[in-house]
Picture 1 (spheres, rainbow, N blue to C red):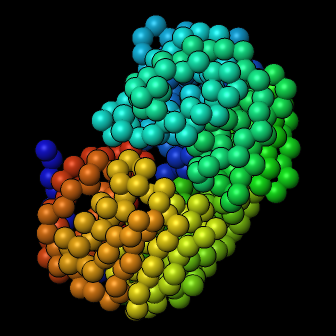
Picture 2 (cartoon, one colour):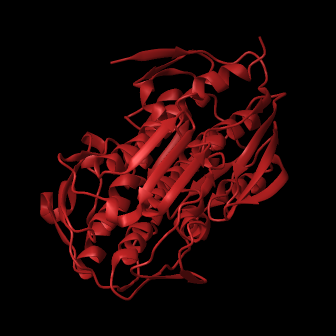
Amino acid sequence: MKKIHLSPIKSPLTGTITVPGDKSISHRAIIFGSLAKGKTTITHFLNGEDCLVTIKAFQAMGVEIKQKGEEVIIESEGLDCLKEPLIPIDLGNSGTTARLLLGLLSGLPFHTTLFGDQSLTARPMDRIRDPLLKMGAQIDGRSNGSYLPIAVRGQSLDGITFYPPVKSAQVKSGVLLAGLLANGETTVIETIKTRDHTENMLTAFGGKIKIEGNKVTVQGKQTLTGTDIEVPGDISSAAFFIVAALLIPGSELTIKDVGLNPTRIGILDVLKHMNADIVITETKQVGGESIGDLKITYSELVGVDVAGDVIPRMIDELPILALLATQAKGITRIRDAEELRYKETDRISSVVNILNTLGAKVKATPDGMIIEGETTLIGGQVDSDGDHRLGMMIAIASLICQEDVILTNPDVINISYPTFFDDLNALQSK
């Protein structure tokens, strides 16, 4: 298994970068572009492994998709052009592709089999299976369709009103996609609003959607129209460099054109409570999404409690926040984040094990963790556990360790940030 040696940083992080396109939006742009009639052009597409899986899935269903780097062009006749795949579709590590495709495939008139890698095969699919069955879907797989591999035989679906038992934008989106193909209306009512990229994307493609607070309703049997989509920089990817700049004395960093969707910027709200010096400038609206530049300056931080409504707005940033908290004054407590246990790995257990191995003082709880601040990180050998966000967290941690860090399985970072190490090296003074 591949290993790389990472050394402590010897200079501040300075300069300007643009992070890759938002992963969630890139997935949805491919999906809606494939469902829409006409031409869709996507710019600043995330050219990472997970999003490439989504492209291949729709190519397997007969959609004409051409990609050149960060530009993707889709020529589609809409639902009429989607055909039964000749072979099972490999979803790799992409939970987003799996759950959103399950919703869509449930209403298409053919049979499809989905499978993934070892990590994806262990992730629960019953959370999306259950509402789809209520709509009339025919789904089978391990543990009655709770886990991949899963076979879907498309059926005529009926709209439902669904109250998600888990705070998951993937589940919401899967149900809404099924609702686009169903008879009548489909409504999803959340207790806490999750990221709303699906709603924004549907509107951008000319779809009809009604939003009333945490209640979202779509009408079935809609026709969408191709459009141009500019994908903003991914706040989840930017978070690693935000934290690095806050931790390394003398750092001053600007990150251009970052997505600032209100359902995604919980990390910025929490960091400001921790006394972080972050300034937002050059804001604009593109395709229903807020975009702006972030200027981050090294700051002396304090521990905070992180819980409640902010958790769904920063679920993917909690691992890097945990690293930051090891250097903040006082105790940081993360609660209400049990969903972390159902990501690419059990991120609560993995984050705690990794940070403690490096010298931190972190304790796992059933729904989060307790982090003791201002601890010295030593270094050591740690594994990414096959999780791209943990791999990047380890790389940022190595910058402030006293000794080298040996990272096992670093290539997993390519899932969401193929140029991560290039960008990190470019910001270090030579």
